[in-house]
Image (tube, rainbow, N blue to C red):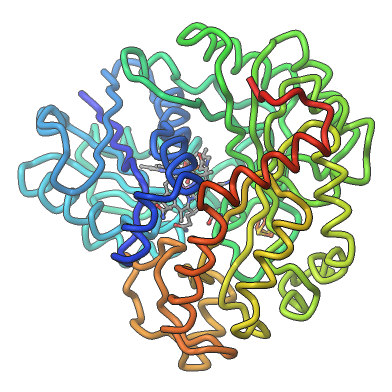
Length: 439
Ligand code: B12
Ligand code: SF4
């Protein structure tokens, strides 16, 4: 069969005012330019797990209307889904099926709503795809009827034996960054979290030599690449983290990852991260002080417990020459109109190199979605296109939806303007031993 893997690319937001701001503020523009073009690692894994004898192609579409015509020549198309683009993905799937192409869908959104997805796809995959995908390909090849394939009905994915993602399929395309995973999942449970945690398997680390193997495969496409670890929480295990960094040092790559605040407690690890090319860690602080954090992490209330160390931790990490992207969620229960200034003051006080502000978003399948729905606080139920992290679709407790919107516009202007961005970055360079350049 000719098999196409279709990734939805680009970023999404519907709030017009925020979009306008995004186009003008330097801090916003930088980060969206970097992340807007990341390849779909999930699909590259599926490509590597495709049984022999099929012809596999990788495609990207920025919207439902920009699907390359070549997909119509495929026998089977695999679409990877996130919630914000799900209606675009369904529209594409409907058109392809009308044209006689079989469609398989997987990824975070359809994994939690497979019954919704089966109205649009022949085969729906729930959970990690490495072991369901070969069965889907076989089903399509023999013309089997539509079905849902659950990862839990197959061998668990052994993360120590993942194949090399088919980075070679990206040949001829240009990316700022390439993604690999060093870990899957996260041992913590934040109420709002809609990451790979949703795929249900526990937190797992990959053998370090296999991470190195995958970076070598990327180097065949681009020497000295910038790597974005598509992990949820890389450095939960510090001993393994030190081993990983040791092995990355000779590779001479630059990298970025998402991790929790506990890295700040291990200065040997921070030294190794810096020496191995770490340029930035993105950390979900969520709110600058403990109040709104209470109960957010549902296993051990970690975020509330860490809050009193937030400022010191950001400074410690940055003092090792690693920039921090401090992430804050706006609209949490317990936050009121003073939260916008509080975030600004925190970011200024610690000179966080980058700051990410997003709106509390109830992704389907999360405990947050269930709670807000029970409380009647979702404004437009099932308006999945609004799950962008930038659109308000719930009623906050400490302000109105409109105050939340106005607050994020104000904070965006304050944080991402040229002067504020320059001040924070200057602060970072004076905290760290870096000499004014991150290259
Ligand atoms: C890289 C990334 C992107 C890239 C995606 C590149 C691409 N073309 O796919 C870009 C920058 C484009 C992106 C955009 C967005 N993203 Co994003 N992104 C990520 C990130 C950092 C890593 C995802 C990843 O590579 N995971 C690793 C792979 C291996 O896992 P996977 O994709 O889930 O695939 C596995 C399974 O799901 C399954 N599978 C997946 N697809 C299929 C298909 C079939 C047929 C089968 C059988 C199996 C299968 O098999 C795979 C292997 O096991 C995650 C955060 C994180 N740490 O996970 C956020 C994340 C996925 N993004 C998120 C969001 C909100 C967005 C945006 C809406 C942001 C915005 N406002 O624009 C947009 C969505 C628009 C869009 N284009 O889809 C949320 C999604 C939550 C949700 N439930 O939808 C996440 C979880 C971040 C977060 N913390 O909230 N993102
Ligand atoms: S620490 Fe991050 S990845 Fe882990 S559960 Fe919380 S939000 Fe999700």
